[in-house]
Length: 267
Ligand code: NDP
Image (cartoon, rainbow, N blue to C red):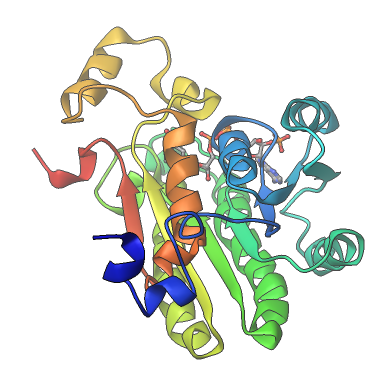
């Protein structure tokens, strides 16, 4: 039986070629010059999208854009500069067109026992991982809701799922993101704007290396609590982001998708 025969109604709108395609969609990825954000950009471009990536440091962004080719652009922006974010969205939409997909990827972590965390450190992490995520989401969603179209993806963490010691501010920020996703999914759904989170497990980036240090015992403990038995690659998160942004996920909103090699199953 052909695909057309199976999906008579569906095939008017969607086929196996288009279900996961992001042809000509514009995707804004914060912190896209390195790590997970860079591979999200690669996967989005592979799927037909154009991307704008941001970060604080110009050089990694330049290098990333050179590697990503003509469908990538970069803008230096610090997401903690909250008043700049509406202007950032305006600038992107004026130069490149409507933002169809927002990926709130930029994030910072700090491993320290809770009682040694200063107000300044706590606020810095909350500002990057939570306040900026809200401010940029609001700026993009205002425009997406008016157009009745858009997909927003938050990058959460296992730290929002279970207790990990010495990451109190990080866990609070990612738990806040998880709560935000549910509220905003409820508010945005009538205007056809979906919002979901991806919760990565252990993904091989500089953030993971910093968190693990060079302690082989810690590496082994992390692997032992990951049923698939290996660390994830940044592109594992990239493909999940493509799926959530695509037409194939059109009935999915308000969820947190673990991409963690089974880490969150429990052990
Ligand atoms: P990296 O440290 O490798 O990359 C973080 C990126 O965010 C960098 O490109 C950095 O660029 C950017 N960034 C940081 N602060 C800001 C800021 N204020 N404004 C703009 N950009 C900023 O980390 P990962 O790729 O590992 O992390 C990406 C996301 O995935 C984060 O949200 C993290 O919490 C999450 N995550 C990662 C996991 C892992 O195992 N790696 C596990 C769970 C979640 P620049 O310094 O130039 O600004």
